[in-house]
Length: 310
Image 1 (cartoon, rainbow, N blue to C red):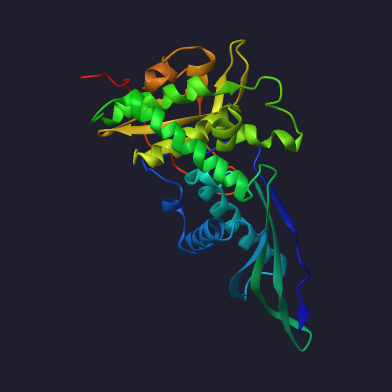
Image 2 (cartoon, rainbow, N blue to C red; image 1 turned 60 degrees about the vertical axis):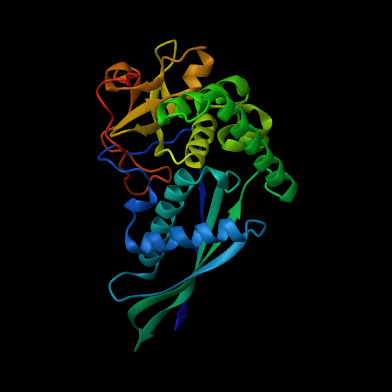
């Protein structure tokens, strides 16, 4: 038997990468294959229970009689990438896990000098991130989220409907977050928090993907169906660039909420919008890849008309 040489694949989330838009679902994990869901659940358990550790193994015990060892490793890596991508979009509370590295361990089986099959026994995944996630940082984060919820409850008033809660969430984010024009595109890892929920709740600074992550986290708290939408948008100068916003469901329809633009424009124009409002500003490509650029995800179909209060 010949041992498989370990292969390391580094996966890093960058600002406002893109995702696909075909269909009507309220989460990313639900779109995964059975094997990808196993990886998703394994990563979730690890992040939830052992986030202070940085490395762990997922057992695979996969035998391939048709693929060469490098192809087996690439196939497994892609499935882990997709599962990781889905998890990060579904669970912005794991703000700190911004990159993972994957290595595979196993062997090739040869008989009479002829390759028969490959076996991958496990995948080692190294989790890294530059946003603070020690006990003190997580305590500070949770305290900030709880403080935000209290304010949102005040904004929403007694017995609010879903639309009123969404408005209150948008209001809190806009009042308590400053868009960082200076460091938003910096490659310096010390500004990583700008791209996740920690930036909004603790640092009070963020860029679009930080805004959308915080909005999703708060919607999850209130049980409001919500998705992060990573696509493209035109800026004030007409330039097209990557952008992040949210989709939310009120009654039977899905709407757009762009808390970043509501904040930077001191407006509520981008609150519970329909397709007609955003068709020339917010774009999604026809073949949208997930944030790891392996595989496709669907987003919920948006209502043509904006939400009208009744």
